[in-house]
Amino acid sequence: MTLADREWRLIREESWDGPLNMALDEIAAETAADGGPRTLRVYRWEPSTLSLGYRQDPESVDWEFCEREGITVTRRPTGGGGIYHDHFGDISYTIVAPAEELPGDLMDTYELLCDPVFDAFERMGVDARFTEEELPALHQPACYLRKLHPAHDVVAGGKKISGNAQYRRKDAVIQHGSLKFALDADRHLGVFADPPTAPEEFRERVTTIREESGVDREEAVDAVESALLDWADADEGAWTDGELERAREHADAKFESETWNRRREDPTA
Image 1: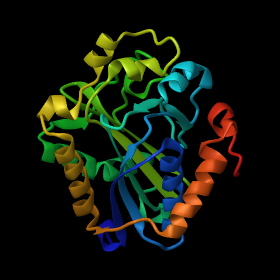
Image 2 (image 1 turned 90 degrees about the vertical axis):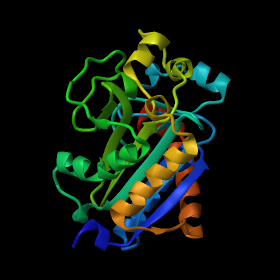
Image 3 (image 1 turned 45 degrees about the horizontal axis):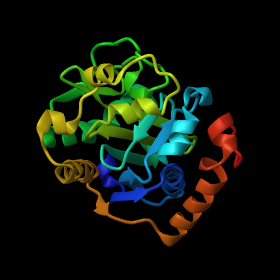
């Protein structure tokens, strides 16, 4: 039985704050593990959010800048560096399925779950691929400036355009990623404490969908959603009232907490 033979739902692009976006991923994992539909989702971050990698040092964040600019900070359950997600320039997706239905090897799972991501780029006219070079880090705390890894960093024209990460629970796998549609290098760097690089260097390392193809944001989102829909032969779906209620409770208890965001201690564990 292939992935497309399973029950999948696509939740089209919606806007949530950072803590709720992360909580919804974990609630979707519970749903899939309990025999419910597997979830594909596309989403925005409102207000703008800095998502920290699981092991990221909170001292790498310019907390005063984030507070002054109204930027939410929340920690992801996945590794890697921090990503600044603004409402316009970032297109995010998540794929959630039971662990038993996916390869046990991490690299094989990345290759499988990134298939619709590459299909989306192709639909947009962007020649994107996993990087073949392990470019050196410019600023380790920043996802888009870390050392590029061939397993999950996607480049176009030699510049990073997408980062992807996995969280493998005992019963489910969550893969989420960021596709860079447009870039505000000043704000992206501003969320970090004393980054040893400049906006010009950032723009030399990172490219965007708009720069590579010229499509508008609505077309780019449609390409991502259509690629996910076709990849899993999914039905259009929505969160249940119960999922949303649980997600809001989980966001409040975990992803909005100082314990989790500042000290990496899960208060719900």
